[in-house]
Amino acid sequence: MEKTILIIEDEQQIVEICRDYLQAAGFSVISAADGLSGFDLVWKANPSLVVLDLMLPGMDGMEICRRIREKSSKPVIILTARHRELDKLEGLESGADDYLTKPFSPRELVARIQTVLRRAGNGQGDKNFQKAALQLDRDHYRAILPWGEVSLTPTEFDILAELSSRPGEIFSRGDLLSAARGVSFESYERAIDSHIRNLRRKIDREELGERHIITVHGFGYKYVE
Image 1 (tube, one colour):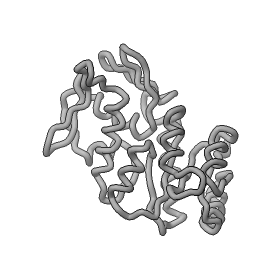
Image 2: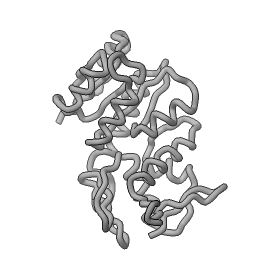
Image 3: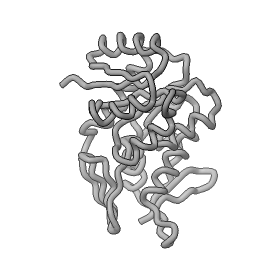
């Protein structure tokens, strides 16, 4: 079935170039030129994936991404003209699955979209995973814990599945990047730190002394039950 990509971008030339490449790759494309109408289309058109510029009139891309994440695990790829590493990491912390820095290759965008959508599909291996108190539901990208359930992005799901598959074992950032199955963060392994922070906000209850994802300084991260 043809998948629909929503592009929220105020530079029409970029939209048209991306549309041409995505349609050639078999996607349907819709677009919005400002943040408010783009955010509205997220829910009205229910696209398979959102390509989101950060600097938009009406509502900026960071705010759109945060609001999407309040209700949905729909895949989001951010486009940014901001070259600072901090800006890229902030985009990931807002809940994006990947990012591209302008100027970018339309072919690379298509490849990133295909990679993220593959992970957001049925996935590889078992769809459901349970280890002690944690249950992972790939069908709905949820983590189910004794106190409740939380929605995860595809990237967060894959990272948590890798960590919890071998409790107590230390995983490097490189290990976790590989677990995300092809997501490219250029040289920024620190992008994993952003996803780890998001996961901790969702599954840890530090106020009750419950911490599942532990930092092992100088080495990486581990999951404890």
